[in-house]
Length: 326
Ligand code: ADP
Image 1 (cartoon, rainbow, N blue to C red):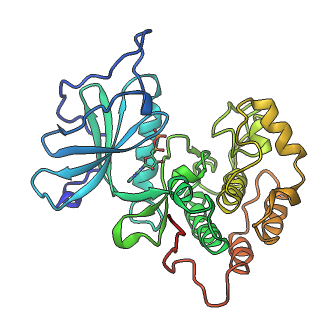
Image 2 (tube, protein in one colour):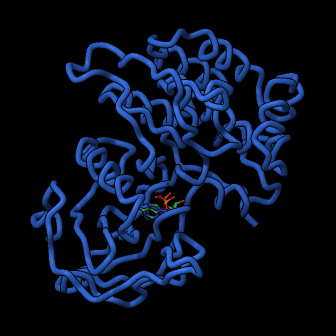
């Protein structure tokens, strides 16, 4: 079994001959811009990368089969080595810490191959952007949105209590589980995570005077636009924008790319105008997170309660999702 072979660190395994495709300036092409790195290739003699199923800004994600145990399927994430490889090392650290925890894909092993680094982990289902786009109205029902809200709050609580903020919360970094785990929401992509608690885990690290931008412009909080240090609150504000996008179908600044214009819209937008289909309870959620001070943990119970109020009596957050797909 793959799980029995797993190792936690960052082992130096079989160096293969695979090499990234370079752009005009000699830099590796990344993510979706690059042709599939390893389609049908075998890594460290054990994992066959069958088909690309996702590409982010950096890595490519494949459906992977274990060579000796054809029934064992997994997901393989692969990234060219180079300047940004710290992201994958960080991702491994977080995945090791979260191993066995609900809402996080289990990491089986990690290593390097040729001029790539890779992670083999639990295969998940589709991400929430893909699911939303396939629904009839390009938006999710209130029930699905708030079930996702409760499950995400559980996931954040687990991650934050381990001392990490995710810093890139958005619908494409949330997936449902594979096959019979389709009712569970998982967080992916920990390459931008940061430890916000000190070594002892009892206090917030002091904020830096200036924190470089981390995240995705459409979903980051106003504090992130202002280059302030991120805390659990900022993950929750990204969840706020995420849930509105899922429930409404879009955010008003979806077509903008300029940093200042997006910030202006976020500052200016009357919250009430953001909600056509979203219940008012979303305002209560925003009030709670927006009033937290730098080193205050969110009240996760209160947030779950707010979201639960939007679900019909008796509906649980882990009841099967009922996507209204074409
Ligand atoms: P990047 O770090 O390059 O942005 P991500 O980790 O965000 O890459 O993954 C990109 C996409 O791949 C995600 O949006 C998701 O759809 C898919 N994905 C990520 N992890 C898995 C997984 N374990 N199983 C299935 N699909 C995944």
